[in-house]
Length: 310
Image (cartoon, rainbow, N blue to C red; front, side, top):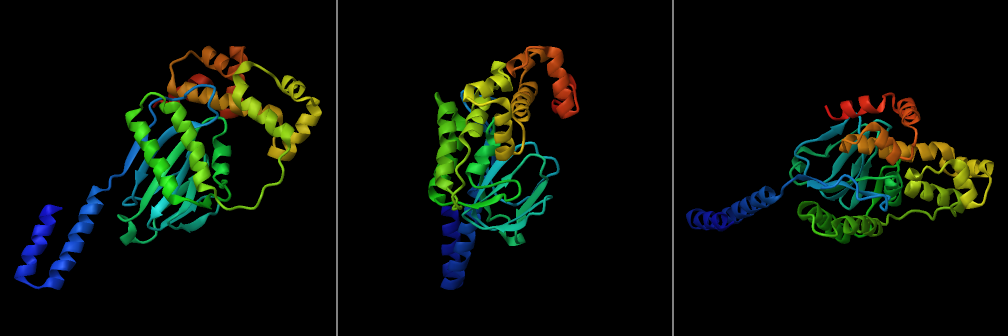
């Protein structure tokens, strides 16, 4: 920066004041752009434990010197734009321009592409982002006010949101003691800071959400749907109706989804034998676990692990 100022002063004496000021601003702006760094920070641990319904997978910051595209994403990700305008498109029909102070989200199995709206904005764009995992990752993005069909939302307090992103980025880099608990807490603080304006939701059926949350916390316990129904004080058929009305799926489908999501994570990030992966995901019979896994993913656990680690 000192060299830039000296250059401008030299030009001031050589030519005129207006030229010097123009060059000074241009050089300072270039220095500021050079100081900005895009980075991807992988969270040091794969999973903090069964106590966390969501956790950090990675966090980062970027400009839009390069466009981004994922033909087959398998992650949940929220972006906050705080400078520049971003052209955001998805295969399910979204074609929008995201303005500063707005969020956009990326969802599993929804191909997407985003870039700077104008070529001159590529270096000026500023985006903070976070990827989350866990049984309630989908619900977390919904808490931010977004769905796969409506993946954009306003951020109510962009200053506070940026502060939270910066702390998450610090935690991912330094990983001090207590980082896991603090990061999960910050994710919920981020939801409060974004707090997109939306119409009040209908009162949610307490039985369906209560059981869904219990499944998310205890999917590895081996409890079946009958036991969850008994725990909630309703019959299996009543619980089925509540789930269909609230989530559009059965309790069994929900429970299997939580278990297989956890099994996939273990297969990707650990060297545990398949039988132990099944046991840690709520299946006591390894053969049954392998059949269920293959039925829902198209691959047996061993094949899935090999494909993910190529």
